[in-house]
Length: 363
Image 1: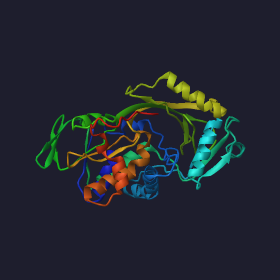
Image 2 (image 1 turned 135 degrees about the horizontal axis):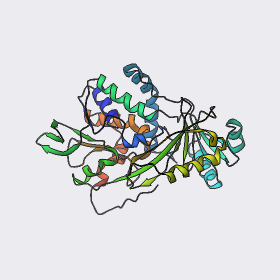
Image 3 (image 1 turned 180 degrees about the horizontal axis):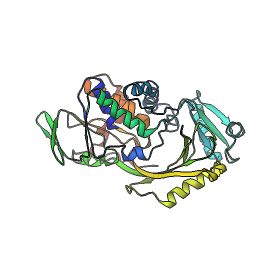
Image 4 (image 1 turned 180 degrees about the vertical axis):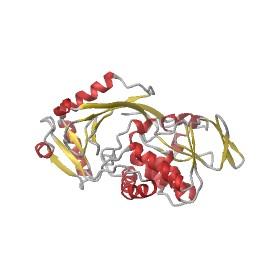
């Protein structure tokens, strides 16, 4: 997320530096398949749906601009997504979603199986989301990083932030080997963002959530659309891989990939695509997603510390929302107009300790 924000800030003429404790993608990016699932993440229209939709639509132009600047193809898929039901309860839920989003297409099970012939008869129906595709997460991260540098941005890698202190009109960022003075700070450290809420007087809203995935490579391509099921997904990639994920374990920050986690995903996938049993196993991995206590990202300025911003809590939608998050932070910093209802919905202010509403995490 930090590289997207840096890209938009530097492109606007501001000078931004990213401090990264590594040199690559973050923990959430490692757990991602890169889905732009606007409608898998929203059940009804509303401001959050609008925010997701705007971000998805930014990718078409972004893919071209990032390639022109960096020669990195982020792998934007034109083949869309299907949200697939394998039980009647999910069928009913998808039909309700179809009523809320009539621009989507409903497909009966036999229609979907005729289109994707490898699917088993467990498939009962699906919603077709033709514009909700996917990208290659690590390439998006790398492209944003290099594009920000092209616009004059800076990068400090292999450094940890030890402290943030307000000194007059500046913030002093204390690193392991040096300190940096800046006028504004954006906390975009994913699942590790929690300490900066508590240290600045807010309630820690972060729900770090471990996710495990694996990739297979069949001898032939079975389908090109991403398939999203009730508790797992299958995302085809241009190189012939199919990424299958993801487990979900709240408040688990371990980095190992478990046999049980991968086994459960395999059973789910083989249930609907039996031919996958013959595919070669390419890789498996895990990462930690930055969930939030109320299930909504935290994007905006601290209610008490002018110049301190948060951009975290995106859970599994970090790739989807990277463009709109970067753009929103840029707009807030440069005094551009931001939709008040979206600003309030995402504001860190909702985590001021008031003894009022209690948020509960739900997977």
